[in-house]
Image (cartoon, rainbow, N blue to C red; front, top):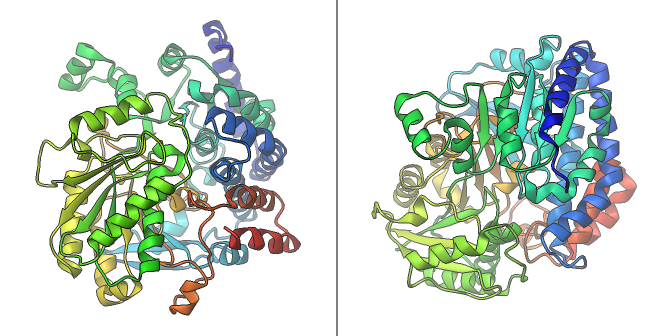
Amino acid sequence: MTTTPATDLETIVTRLTKGERAWARTSLYERRLLLLDTAAATAAAAGAWVRTAARIKQLNPASPLVGEEWMSGPYALLTYLQALQETLHHLDEGTDILAATRITQAPGGRLAVQVLPHDTYDKLLMNGYHAEVWTTPGTTEDQLRATAGLTQRTPRQTRGVALVLGAGNIFSIPPLDVLYQLYAENRTAVLKLNPTTDPLADVYRAVFKPLTDAGLVEIVTGGPEIGGALAAHPGIAAVHMTGSEATHDAVVWGTGKTANNAKATGTPKLTKPMTSELGGVSPIIVLPGTWSEADLLYQAKHVATMRLHNSGCNCIAGQILILSSDWPQKHAFLTALRRALATAPARPAWYPGCEARVQAARDLHPHAEKPGGTPERTLLTGLDLTDPHETAFTTEYFGPVLGVAEIPGTGTRFLHAAVTAANERLHGSLGANLIAHPDTLKTLGHRLRDAIADLRYGTIAVNAWTGVGYATPRATWGAYPGHTLDDVQSGIGVVHNALLLDHTERTVVTGPFRPAPRSILSGEASLAPKPPWFVTNTTAARTGRLLTEFAAHPRWQDLPALFASALRG
């Protein structure tokens, strides 16, 4: 892919500055039409998008794992575009964005806004899954309703040109981040692609053609020098990035001694507003209970999926499994987990530097297990949460390395200890996962929601992977609020948030403990089969394609084929 010449950057920023003035004159109705046009362009480009993504990730085109590229690529973008245009429709009509949305109380003076299921299709396609956006403590319902819509309530008050430094691992992230700048922040945007995604540049340009033609979005390629030049350009008003903490600090503070001096004096190199999503070390807390053999096997595959999806190269990949040392079934679960890691479909460690990061983890842990499946898969058992020098708690591996730590106790004693460990010992605050038998959840009652309120994470999933929160368009996605530029951890700010809610703190997702039909036979109110995002799902590619086609053109007559594919997974 040809690098965008530095001499072109001035022209690009000038064009977007002019586009900002046009954006200020663009009505809500026209803004909504642009979203619909972008959705049509995304649907038309979806096949090329997935084929290119599979080549980048070295996947066999016939592999079920290609389903990951459908679901975390065009499907995620299409569902967001459809949700966001609905919000714009409400604003344009002058109706309450939250009129049909269930709002309840959450612990600590918070409100819980139901964002999944949102409509009848959600109830069918995501049966048994729920998601809420929790507000900051003290937010009133009147405040929430009055501010929903963010900058689109005053669309003429635009806020300049934004630079978006795109992610290189999940390919819906760059376009979703651009749309958030355009619609939530009311800024035009230049997207600087991560070199990993350069082969997708033409696909992204096709997707964004309606917005590019309107002078609202530009896409550039190249190395760090291009991103640095744009960040420093006086015509850029703000920067957003998805990536690593190291890259963030290089943009904000510089590198080497320059960065150290800048941090010490509180004088960042970048003085513009900077938002970010940077990953971290995500916990998977397993609450002890009495599980059947089928439960052990299924949840082992669930945990393996949290780590192995995208070969572990996810900011939201589960990294530290926290178990009770007093759980009688602990060894049986670990045996099932080793098997799940070993037998999950093989795939390359495709993301740059993955092998080196895995080897570094193994070098620091001489007793690391290699459960098989692919050479890079690694299991680190016996990690000590009281050891202040344990690097597995502070290093995001961004590869197929899973750590295991144990804490004594059962019930609320274990839950509180695990929450404390997750908050205080693990670096970052993007997402936390909890797995618990329905009987355990029933016994905990309100204490579970109290524990969720205590967890300082931006997305928390119970019996689901936090990746479900990423894929829920009306949910917020980002770190727990409170990080600063000099201690940024998992980042600052949120994205997605198709309801354009203000005063948000976190997203809470819940899912079924068992897939159908076992869920129904066990008394759970869920018809959901094994999720298509499971790495062991054999029909994921077909299901992902059908989901994408349905998101582009929802029709009742297309549901039987979609359900049949999902049930065969």
